[in-house]
Image: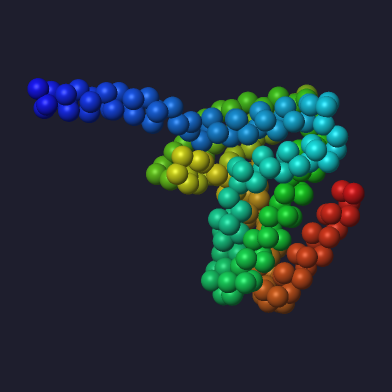
Length: 199
C-alpha cells in the first residue's frame, strides 16, 4: 500500500510539473511580450514624458543582456581591459544603447510589428520580426541568449546591419589609437550629449 501511495504521489507531481515546464514561453513569445508592452506604454496617454521614459527604460533593461553585449562588442579588447574598466564600459554602453534605442522607439507612429519565426539552438536563439509601415517593411532580427527561463537580447540586426558589429568596428579603431581609457572618455562624452539632447 505504501508503495502504491508513493507511486501515485510521484505521478501527481509529474502531472503538475510538466504543464509548468511547458508553460515557459520561448524566445519569440518573450520578445513579443516586451514589444507589446513597449507599444502599450507609448500609447498610454496617462503617462507624462518622464514616467513613459522610466517605464520604457525598465522594459529595455529587463530584456537586454548588456554584459554579454559589452563582451561581444569589445571582443578581444574585453580581455585586455581591467575589471574596473570592464564595469565602466558596461555602465556607459548600457546608457548609450538605452538612450539610442529610446530615441528610435519614441519615433513610433502606429507601425505594426509582425513576428515571423524563431530558431533555437541550445542556449542561443534568433527571433525574426518586421516593422510594417506604409513606406515599406523593416526586418529586425534579435539574437538572444538563455538565462534560466529568460531569453535576453544580446544583439539586434536591423536590415542586415548588426548593432554589435557596428559598435565593435568603431570602438576597435578607438582602442587601437587611444586605448581603453580613451574609449571610455569618448563614451562618457557621448552619454552626456545624449542626456542633454533628451532634457
